[in-house]
Image (cartoon, rainbow over all chains, first blue to last red; front, top):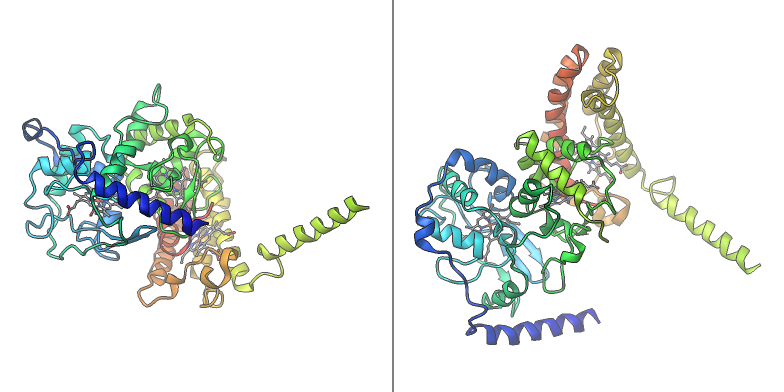
Length: 293
Length: 155
């Protein structure tokens, strides 16, 4: 049954991919180059964005220096194995020769300098909501990090998921800049959580095609590593106070003093560096989430 | 009659489940490992709640908890961190990942970091609640580093 369903998805995806390659609606989008060129970011203000976005958790070589974004970490998924690319400041092997507009296209539209789609294993479906200022500051900060000449390794994906054109369909279905969770009194927290901290990428379950199920926002999901579970954090699953959540984001300690692990550890490396007001803002947003199963 | 049968059957099932969930029938190494972790947790809770202002600061209790952490983090745990007792072999009974026994395992280093952070905590735990919070930081960082690499996420 599951195999049949998988086969159907593959056939459907393959057919769509073949059609999509030439379709206008699934073409890779780009930003307005002149508009972006005038932005000049501050490296000092980009450091917290880098940590909250946990770029290093995926792009630093496993076991290596966290500031050297040489790539190499592998992600095994139902679609095959992705390998994080080198995004260090090396002109030959990283982003050293990119323009700021190239970087904006990657973060906001998941589009490469060659005009192809990135796979959403790179969580640009969240980063797309980042402000111009924060993307420009992040870009300025990343330019200060060391270069590595380790060549980017190819992904090992199964057909038809290895066709970047299929991602055009995925984007048409799932890539939205609109925020999902509550923002009436929790706008700052929502921005930090949904645009940069990309909490939903792990805490929200996905559809068969790998899109987030917005009607089950933060309701918990299988761990992206393939082993274990990511807990739900809506009030249906989590009864911690706002102060408890903020303390967890600062120290990693739960209210009963277990300590965080798994993918959450990298998130806490980022949130622990934020000002207390920003942690409180994220906690308020989490408390305001509608209960979901 | 039928109802009674169903009830007693479910009682048996319930007992069986609680036994396999870590009680007597469980793997002794797993039981000991979890017990060790629970002792970390309990002593941290005493200190953490004082640091957070949830409970009143008490010099003697704070010092005792910090001294316990020093003792716990310097005990040899070799007897219950043994190959063959990870979630690859025992499934849901344990959250220990097999990577802990691979050649590049950092668990020993993390254990040493935890011991050093606990010694530093014990040096200030008796001096007041303001000192406890910051000194808990490196302790928590060591707990988290190990849970990140060697404990499967499952809440």
